[in-house]
Structures are given as structure tokens and as C-alpha cells.
Image (cartoon, rainbow over all chains, first blue to last red):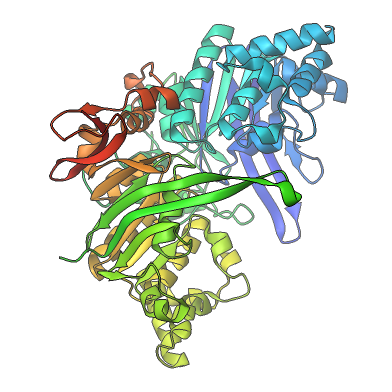
Length: 320
Length: 311
């Protein structure tokens, strides 16, 4: 049984001007210990998918529907508040892009990690604090005690992100959702944090969902890739296949447009146009207005998500 | 040939205040230290480094948007460091800037045609009708059709807003463009569009661009030459491919080391260097004189400058 099992998830936000359809029929499953990258641009629905699974969206306005949404055997669609609280942190933890807004500015880092540990387990405060110090040391923070006593504004973005990872790991989750964990950080710090997440995932035998717009991050960290566009899954495949032979025209175009792959000042292969408007998405395949190989039926009907092989699937009319 | 832009020994020191009232103490925080750079005509110079390395402050000083503590700024060979507001105005026409966050850089109450025509208006160039016409032409040149002239910034995507910001910067036909992380906030599929636009306009208009970025992959596709900043200093400068294939400074190497691989087969364990490691690994060179144990920027090849301890 997969650890995370989603079938036909839709998330929408009714607004004055119409309904924003953020996620339009996403199916996804992650096995225990597996690492999956969800790649997409802003508005592709990748973050909203994760937030919906953990029921972190305010409902209303958000409307979540799915044929199935199970996390470690718990039906997340019907779970009670107490079931949700038990799942969050212990079954699944999340690391956000902006650590500055994810921490409460009026409490010390130590206070917040201790609180998290004690919310899920019956341990004394001093014990929880010792554990917090160990966790900070585990994420390669050299002076754990000093960091525990610090307030969020006193730390750099990189240091805060490390502390947030430590907090996320404090209840030994079975799966970690990392939503653009390195986007706001400097390149050198980014590489260190990716390395750390990879090491911890292996060590804890933890599942990982890495949400990112950066194909480089995916190439560095995950086993399998899910490519999203316009609220839908375009393609899923083992990471090496995605880089060796992307099947979907969107994935192919994305790969071709990456700067800096070959030496020399040069024009890049560009994808014309802009991402679809989520409150008024184009009919048919969401990528068809920008697709170089689109046909008439691409604009008329949504292509089915079809298996290409045991491990690969894609949604494109042009694929067998 | 006279360079489009030249910075000579530029420094910027900010005063930090500790405590308050009459007994507040002040300390100096050097943001930019002794930066000398040459941007030749018709070239793109990349300025890279992490946040806090002083690259944006350097760009803003070059535009006279931040006053340098010391040093000189030359535009087309003219020293503009000490010019007052009125004397500076003709030079402002020659140098324009594009920022990372195009949303906060565009006035939400103005139409795109008004935004792009505003520099012409400020410099009193042409009649209102001519200004509007030129603005629409410029929008077309940056890839937006004329119908966009009557739209407002909030109607646009990030990539389109950045096109408007570029159109506004280039309508005066400047000699120098400072582009501060113009692609960092853009989606992957749009980033390539803006890079191509800058390359096309540079070739077409004979622009010289100071391209400030932390993204080395973008820098590789776009620039002729790269200067690397670390803690307010330039630690290495060379032709772009030299930086990518023959970097000599440990900080440059650590930046290159951090670029994500683009093939999962090439995953590897990386070695990370702390600030202290980098300082300790400052290259040592003999045959260039003696710098007394302190690092100094020297020319090690015709097109390659490196900060090293000379012994």
C-alpha cells in the first residue's frame, strides 16, 4: 500500500471573478521511503496539491474534492481535527519556502521546537530540549544551544531553514513535504541544504516530496518526477528518464530552455507565451496554446493520462 | 576605445548605529570595497556573488542611485561622480536600470503606454503624440503588441511586466543598462524569453549591460565577461568561459561547485567551504611583487584578474 495515495484531486477557490481552478484532477502515489519531485511553474498547482493533502488550506474558500486522498491509511478527506493533528508532524511534516514567515517571531527557536515535540509525545521539557539540540546538531548547526536561544529575526535565512528542517524532523515523520525549500537562499547554501535533505531522507528511511520549479534541484535529489502544468499532471517518470528522454512536449520544451547547458553566449530555446490563467484555463490540454506540436484535438479534449511503460505515464494526444 | 562604463576604486561604507540617544555608538560597515570595473561598449558584464556581497550596491552606485563613499564613476569617459542633479540629467539618459521585482517598479495607476513614454516626457523629447507612438513601438520591440499600450501592470504576467520594464529602460536609447536580477523572479519557461530579448536588444541597439545575478547558469548564456564579488570586493574577473573552466579563486570555485547538475547520473557528494575556509584558501602568487600578506587584485593574464596574496 502506498504511503500517500491521491486519485483525481481537484482544488478550487471560488472568487468574485469566477472559480480559480488550482488543481484539476491530480493522481499521485508515493511509496514509503520514496522520493518524488513535483516540478512546475508558479500557478501549476504543485504547492496547492501538497497543502490540500495535509488539509492546510482554509476551507472555505478552498474546495477540495477527490476520489481518494489517503495518507498512511488515513482518509484525509474525512479525517477529524484530532486525526489531522496526529498526522501532521508525525506522519507528514512540511518545510516551506520562506522560513522567516513559518516561524513565530515572538518565541525562541528552542521554544518552538520543544513545543512541536511535546505536542506529539509525552516527554519532559528538559528532555525535549536536549532532543532539539541534538536535531540542530544533526542538521549541521555548529552551535545548537545558541540557536535554540535565538529568535527568528536574529538568524540568517539559511540558518532558519536548517532550524525548520530540524523542527520538521523532530517527530520522525514518514514523509517530508519540502516546498521550494531552497529557492529563497543563496546558491552555496542551497546546495548544502539539498545535500542535507538527501542524507536525512536516506538515514531516516523517510518519503520525500520535493516541490520545485528548478529542474536542477530535481536532478540532484529525487528518484521520480511528476511534472505539473496548469493544475494537471503532464508526465511522470523515473528521474533519469525525464532527463534522458522527456516524453511530453512541455517537459521537452522545459529541458531545452534551461540556460547555461552549453558554453558560450547564445540565444536559448524559448517557450512562447505565458502560463495559463487559472480562473480561465484553455480548453483541452492546458499546454496546447504554447505547444509546438499541438493539433486540433489538443484544444478540444483533455488527453488521458496514459501509461507509456511500467514506470512512465504522460498526458498527450501525440503519445501512443 | 572608451568603455561605456568605468568604475574606479569605488567604496561604500554604511554607518551602523548601536543603541540610541546621545550615547549611541556608530560602527562602519563596508558594503563595497575598492571595486574597479570596466564595461566595454557593446558587451555584457556579469556581476555575481551571494546576497550581501555588494553587487547590487555596486550597480546602484554606477547609476548614481546610491552615493559612493569614495571612488569614481565614468560614463562614456566622463566623470559623473560629483555632478549635481541638473548636470547629471543628460547622463541619466545614457544609463538606465531594470530591477528584479517588476511589480513594484511599475506605477499601478499608469497604462503601459504612459509608463514607457514617461522617460521621454521627463527628458522633454518630442510631442505627446510622438512620445505615445514611440512607446508603442518600443512595446512591440520587447514582444508585446500595440494593444498592450492601454493596459495596466496588474493585467500582466511577471514576464510581460519585465518586458515593460525593459521597454521603459530602453526607450531613451541608453548606452548602459544595469539589470539587477531581471530574471530571478520569473518562471522557468519565461526566463529564456527574457534572456533572448536582452541578447537581441543588446545586439540591435549596441547596448552595454551590467548584468547582476546570483544565477551562474543564466550568466553563462548571456555574458561576455564575469566579475565575482565576495564580501564587498571583486575576487576574480575573467572572460565568461574562463570563469567556468579555469576559475582560480576558492570563492568562484565554491559558486561553481554549488550549481545543480542537470543529469541525475552526475550526482555527487559536494565539499562545502565556509567563509573562513575561503579566506584561508586565498591563492598565493609569486612573481607579482609583495602585498605584505594581504590579498590584492592582480592581472594574472590579459583578460583575467584574481585576488591573491602576493609573495
